[in-house]
Image 1 (cartoon, rainbow, N blue to C red):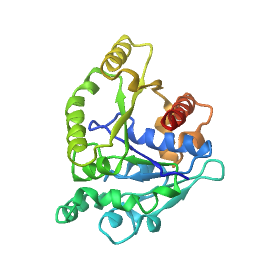
Image 2: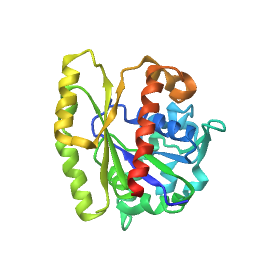
Image 3: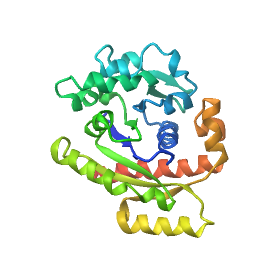
Image 4: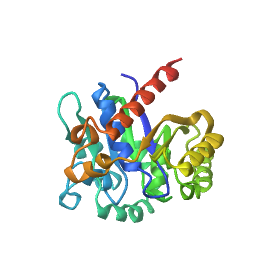
Length: 262
């Protein structure tokens, strides 16, 4: 097996479907036989809670990995059943303290990348749910990743701040991770009946061209409900609109594998 595709799912703006995308894409890929690890790097622990884990009851999380108290394999939690199972690394609220710890660590931007190296040959995909702000934790995510997927809500205000995000990514590429690429822009929370949504999609296409995924994630009640049941969308409502959209995205992401081999 070749080394995993390490993909950060990142947007500095909250409410764009970042965590939903990490979980749903990871679950979709696992249903197609890919070995998947998700890493919750957000102190809000949205991915962890969404998969039915009470983060405040955990004894070990990504916080312990970054603090050198545990290796990634020791913190992995398995979710799902055969044909749709995947691994994830949980987070919790005390994870915010790790920024203070990392601040005194030599090579502090490299800690996550070095931790991932221990397991990257065991997976096809490692998906990282990044914090919704630029911080030392986010810098670790950007340095550890090979690719970036950016979910963008199809509303005008969602475009505000994207230049700042792109500027931050460019700085990381120049100084710390020259191989980092934006390989997917994903339109989320889309309502094709609204003229404004369609106008925003046109603007996104003008800025990002072929980098934007053809799949657009529509607003979905099932996607909003699934986390409260501790399930991904395919477990919770496999015939829902949300499941269909993320299945389509999964197929697009796997199609990128063929392009990468050429």
